[in-house]
Image 1 (cartoon, helix red, strand yellow):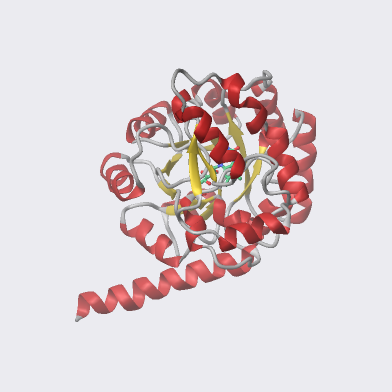
Image 2: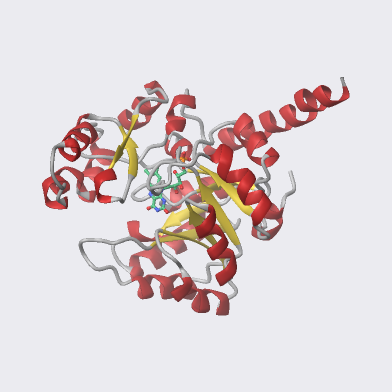
Amino acid sequence: MRTRVTEMLGIEHPIVQGGMQWVGLAGLASAVSNAGGLGIITGLTQPTPEDLIKEIDQCREMTDKPFAVNLTILPTIKPVPYEEYAQAIVDSGIKIVETAGRNPEPFLPLFKEAGIKVIHKCTSIRHSLKAEKIGCDMVSVDGFECAGHPGEDDVTNMILLPLAARRLKIPFLASGGLGDGRGLAAALAMGADGINMGTRFMVTKEAPIHENVKQKMVDASELDTSLIYRSLRNTARVFKNSVAEQVVEIESQDGETRFEDIQPLVQGVKGRELFDSGDLDKGIWSAGMVVGLIDDVPTCDELISRIVREAEEIINERLGSTVSA
Ligand SMILES: Cc1cc2nc3c(=O)[nH]c(=O)nc-3n(C[C@H](O)[C@H](O)[C@H](O)COP(=O)(O)O)c2cc1C
């Protein structure tokens, strides 16, 4: 498949692995890139900018294909030296960055100067248009189905993608709810130039998380996600475990929810422990509705080849014969 995404990013297949806190390490990113997609190292998973440089170096030893780094700019309890992370990315010679969370404008001069292509992840058309206006090279349009932060508009990709196709001039990725060849074919049909997947790549052999987490996601249905932080207007879609249900319960009580009331349940460090130990009720973890479409734990290479093969069959055969009939 050749699209504006494969051309711009210099990759074989129009499939990107979105940044994932605690999951986007060199092993996963290089596996995706070696399989012809674009792997992404998650910048803030590394405790310091120096550690990020080391992770990038390690990834380079594992693949000679393009890979990217995600920089997520979100309000945090502990201040994050974003400028130093951005500088580490530039100094490492990375040529593609995925930004998310907030308007990336302050970082664009630095990235552009270094010849870096910037993919900004947005959950609305207005933010996508803004990203195009300020000079981002590509956007990733994250629909309401997605894992992580879907925003507050609750618009699904069935609406967002055709709108993005009508209004944007720059290439865009469909993100959220994608996990198979049907999804890729549909995303291309709706005007996207490729797909970005998070949850589906968590459930691969190379994802650095405990087998219990992967198996739980294989067993899950499309109903097994929860929306938390709705009352704080910072919605996140996470796997529906007992901790997520407690958070939703606290938020549904009368009166204003204070972050302090839920903070002990949602600490990032607990999510990391959950991934390492396989104790599924240790904390929370991001997961999208696409868990309902996940039935196995393939390698990234098997997954990407299968998605591309299925999509090509659908486009050439099922859709082709529908038109010629
Ligand atoms: C475990 C996990 C952690 C994530 N962490 C981040 C993150 O740190 N920064 C970010 O921009 N997106 C993050 N995301 C969102 C993904 O990059 C991607 O946009 C999203 O997963 C797409 O929806 P999908 O899961 O339905 O494919 C995360 C997703 C998952 C599943």
